[in-house]
Length: 529
Image 1: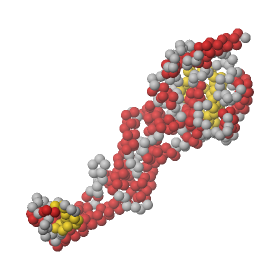
Image 2: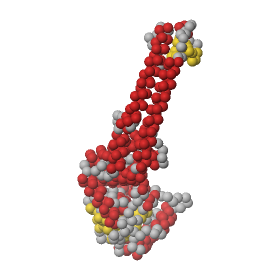
Image 3: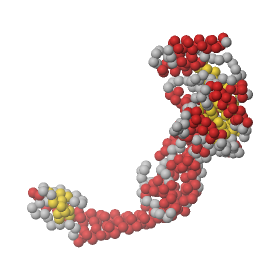
Image 4: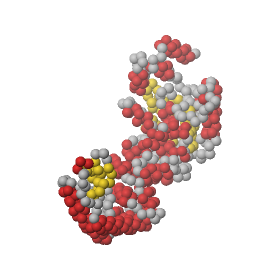
């Protein structure tokens, strides 16, 4: 999938697109080719995106997960047919290995017949190649391919029998004289103590200190039988080659149809991976709309959910409604970054027409989803400070010519002074609103939403202050935090009472009691004034 068409490397890192790619990647070579071609939909193609997502969701409902897995297992072991098709299209004669690849490819295709149409010409070739099936993974040009094969092979068998009989007589005579039960085919060893006088018709091929390597010397009758055998074998090879040439012509005549079938199988492999994704993560098709908005209820950022559930920890879905530049606040470790990632994750899937992990969702098609801030690989480096890197990246993002962009900003200007950081963030939000950009901006700075008249969302935060975990037990501290934190995101009126979640969090993570107590006192003093 061409994720790079709408997200850059920094955003891909922030959204953990590598995880998503691993979930959606198909299993066959045709599937991988189709996957590499898959482009996101663009603004104006809302109907196509909706139809694609609805089709995936409908197929996910109609197919049993076991059926999906069985088809994916078949696709995983399916050989790539394109080398054989390409050889035939160029006029080359297909070898038995190529014909076996086509046979096994067509075996899988016929299992997918309910979802991948097969032309009459392809079915005819499948029936033709079926004659050559030899066991599970073998191919042999059986006599049924051409009536002449049976005749020349019978002649070859008779010639082989005549040669075997002629050589057998020579071998029996040599065995008697060497006092052996038999002389094997090919070369044989005679020990030196038994080789004072070799029988007539036995010659030395190579000498060693303790033995002689010998072979039978054929007489005129045996040589004539050998010539007849080789001539008969050559006629068999010629007849088999003629059959391969004819079968190759049949494939070449259908090369374009085969290529179309290869593409159809690849596209279905991609679709099947999306169906499995939809089933596994309880996804629904988003309603794709033309207006600039992103709304969802009980949505999940799957990479984190997958990680937490693997650890036996709770994951809490969130609901968000964006139609402009909005502000998100909340405590440290309360899930602000996850909320931004959830927005990007839903928008990215919607752009490709893939159902999303939510109870319900509505999304525009964004042709640019961009991340700015912490939690991502930063492409810029060198002598630039963190703040300078942010400014350079922001300038680049604002200059992009996207017709429909989603900007996700996590703690912009966090490394400068709070006073200047607030001024810059207020100015940025006002500029985004003037330009009609959809953005979600997470910050710890207070009063931003009120000064910009932007909608304000907040993570609810700690429901109660948890007890500190035993010293040094970070996992216990994190578990206690998760049990006490309300990760839900709700729209709020800015300027509400401050909650000392950061102080409580520092206490939970084992910060010195004296420092925690003094910080709490400072907060009480500020509140009193």
